[in-house]
Length: 402
Ligand SMILES: Nc1nc2c(ncn2[C@@H]2O[C@H](COP(=O)(O)OP(=O)(O)OP(=O)(O)O)[C@@H](O)[C@H]2O)c(=O)[nH]1
Ligand SMILES: [Mg+2]
Image 1 (spheres, rainbow, N blue to C red):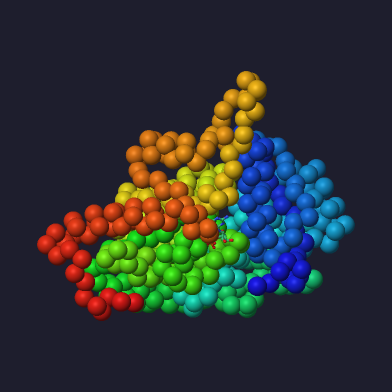
Image 2: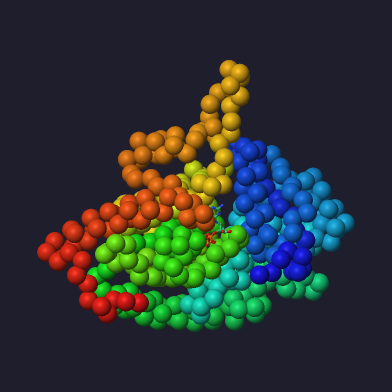
């Protein structure tokens, strides 16, 4: 694996807003995530710029005074990319680029860029390329591609190490070609999924970096790539898992993130079909992350968008080894107890009371509580199985082995 000092990191700055809907803490938290995204894309963040505004400036996103500050910093430090936390309109992007004279990337495009780097199979590559070009088409005229000194790096990667095409006409042709290609693959995938027979299908879902692939590896003894970067997994892996005498199919798929580009949700239709067609969802949560409740909400919102919000779901709270409640000083009678002080037990009670669903607390890394996890999954899968085959419990022909 590459260590930080062996990769050349590209200098970047982050730009975000504090608004009425987004107070200072929220804004910093979003920028933390944006910095993690930038790092995953190969960027080193030198500085964050934050401005209080009622709403983004329609021409340049931030005000002119702040922009001048950013410009001076970019120039003085040879910054390659300015990354904005919200989606920029094509006009904003063009205006800002003219002022800053460096690459201007927004959160959406940064995510697309990471996806382009990470796509492994030709199917994932096709999906990402389509999403990139659909995003780029209205922006091509203002794009930074004419900045000779800025070729390559963040925002310039197409899938498979190639550079993105910037000729409008070629891009249009490419889009229609990619759409045709995806349609064809979608059909093949549908047939493949159909061939998997009647096994109960379980899908791991969750925010990115919560430990889905690690959990998949632990319970299916497979070798799915897991890494402490965002979007380690892009392609779906499906494994047959047997718990007790009960076999089922378990799939691990792309992680979700807030403000997931709609272009991606659409072009990843087939990947997400794995979720849509699952009988049971295991919603994995990183309980050691301070905003895990927001993560849950973002995941639920995307599940809703892909019409999968009503599926039977088990909440799997992972990384309990890394969870640390804030302590309250016994003598301190003033500090009010907040959620940050909850013990794992309190979280579990809260969750099960509020949602009336099973909540399992585990550490996939340290293999803690996996027995309880297996038992809970077993019961849930068995319930589905029994309703599906009332007369034929657990009799599976051998050919389902993947
Ligand atoms: N402390 C701790 N770390 C964990 C645990 N489970 C996974 N991790 C770490 O969390 C990071 C992300 O794990 P992955 O399994 O790649 O997460 P993922 O949800 O598949 O992520 P994406 O595929 O990027 O969406 C890795 O560095 C894991 O080692 C756990 O139980 N405790
Ligand atoms: Mg993964």
